[in-house]
Length: 219
View 1 (cartoon, rainbow, N blue to C red):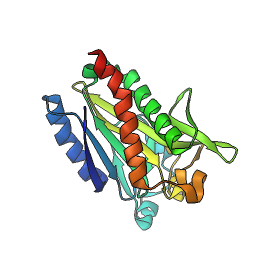
View 2: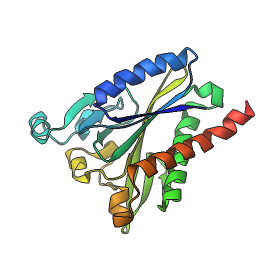
View 3: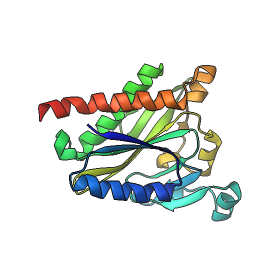
View 4: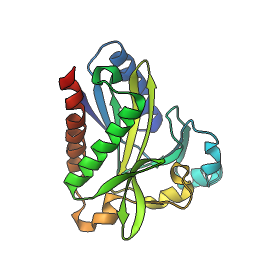
């Protein structure tokens, strides 16, 4: 079963470099890992073309707002990371769990849905839109983005769950390249009942362990 490392707050590029190091270790047979982190404000662009058209802010506007811009090697489109958002990077060997790439993405989705249900929020998948959605005061809104990369059969990158995220930052982009779709957070939905970041972390860890357990017991 994976080991958990809480990186606290770490710049996106620094965390990416650390992921690369851990990925190499896991690919060579080391214990699987789950990295948890919050990033300072950053817009990241995935490998799906033409992702640049979904960046609404100019470089000058990003600099003025104190938001970094990084071209990532993950799948998916464009997204924002910032304080109050829980980012989880599972680094696991897919073959050890009998997972295809699509099966792995669905496992992440199921895990987030289960974690949110435990926290008191009903969430769901939407066909043709990777990630997790929920109802926000009558509007369907995205609460968790997913973007992964698989190399040497080992996963990198992962998911970003909005807990107490500054949602105004998403105005800088077309989130995940989906025009006219809203973004939400646990805080926006739950208000004063929003769980602590530590509670969200422990709940997500448990959900990911439970999702991987059946695959492990079958091997």
